[in-house]
Length: 267
Figure 1 (tube, helix red, strand yellow):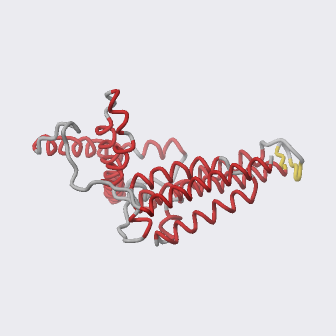
Figure 2: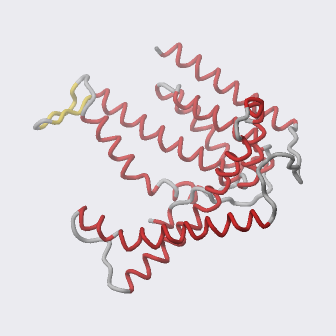
Figure 3: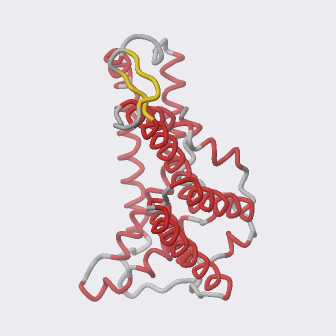
């Protein structure tokens, strides 16, 4: 299960999606999320699904890698679907005991599961096609107007970059600790929920110790390199918008406007 968590990973490439400016991809992701939450009925979701499939195809990221990232969320997706399926008022289709399946509940459950899957897949596509350094530079550039009110933009972007960078490292460290504990006879898969939670203590303690040790080593390394925040810092690679970025943002705006029009006519 731990190996299925792919958040924070970056797949190098030279596709048109990889070459987009990180600021463009951040803005497109934001537009995609807003547009997805405005979707209503099958036509809107169909348009968004075609857009997502096209983006995945252009990025040349294997669908298997994207679907792999959904595995840790299966329980949440199923729980959300069940809640909407049985507890939505409307025209009753099937009724047994205290449970009722309505047409509206079936529809809401389907749309909600589809929305969660598309939301996670589209968000993962951002980190898969953009390196943590590029994400940091793009986020800092987009938030740079906040520097006028003394908001710590550089520090915030740096923290997010470090967090993304260390997600795969911590997952690998957790997997090693679990393997070592299993070799000593630990059992993480049997028993009730309280017994399983208690069995996680031998994992969490060394994991937290390792995380704090890594953080201390990173802080020492940054101090040794005379890191003092973003004041007066320059960048090796300057971000520049290109024609493809303008076309991509225009496509995102057209997509948002189209979904709003569809939503208006379907109400």
